[in-house]
Length: 306
Image 1 (tube, rainbow, N blue to C red):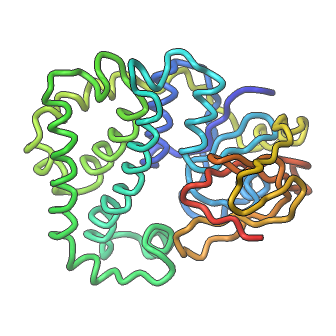
Image 2: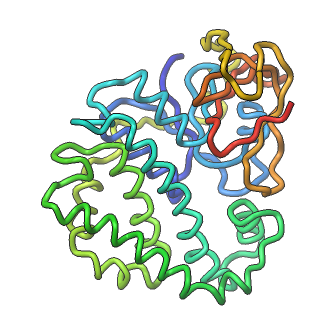
């Protein structure tokens, strides 16, 4: 009942980041495959409307967005650390940079080939990644500019790896490696120009197979129905907590809604505050299929509406 369950699908780029994190930890986890596009009837009862991939489940606690998933995994499975040596909190900042950089990568991959993609898929993904009214012809026309921006920032990674360390922080892999690897994995596998771009960076190309070799830990398949049954049979374990310094003055039991900062037309997740601190907010909500669940979001990148 307390197994870590990852709801994902194989080609999902952010899921690859979390799969590498689970590989660093080398832990056993359950794997539930979710649809690539809506409708997602076995997702919404758990998340309350959050439809991005991946999300993570532990009993009746649901973790949305990789930033909060990483924090929870590190807390529950502290060794080996995602922050080896003197990394401390720095990889969280690198992870956030990588997630922002992903939107640039998505413009290159999706914007550069949108005319060849299925209409339903491109309509869904462009709105999700680029906002509620994306201008795909303009994104397509701007692809050389986006590639120049990505090339410069990959150059920063190359400079770091050129110092003869096998991983971003030294001898051991860290969150920084998982966070940057998924961008390289995505651009190489999904963009025709990816291999040529990456060929300019020999240290990235040497680091890439080292990260890939970490693997994904010890996954075991699970059906979506089993995951829903687990949520229904358990209760959230998240304690009540308020933050007296919270700028929004959020209180336990207060009715709120959470939505990504990017205006993508996604549903707002409604519930009552169960837990809040500087890094996360967790909402209690009830659903006829799963009963009471607690849905966790990071504060960065999300708006709490009161």
